Length: 56
Image (cartoon, rainbow, N blue to C red; front, side, top):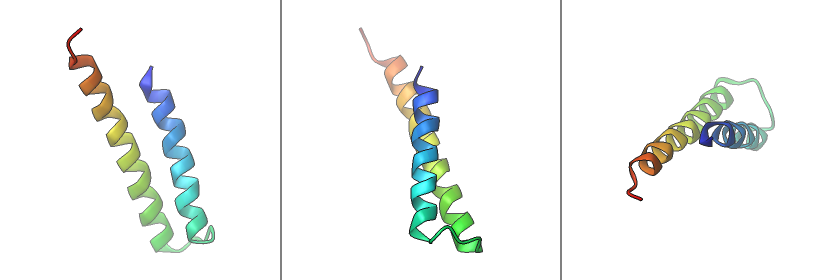
C-alpha cells in the first residue's frame, strides 16, 4: 500500500529537483534527479519494512 504513495512522492521530488536546474538536459540534472528519486524510493521501502516489523 505504501509503494504507490512513495512512487508518487518520488516523481514529485524528481520534478522539483529538475525544476531547480531549470529542466535542463545537462548531466548534473540527470545525476541530481536520479539521486533524489532513488533516495525517496529507498526511504519508502525502508519505512514499509519498519512498519511491517512494528509490534501490534
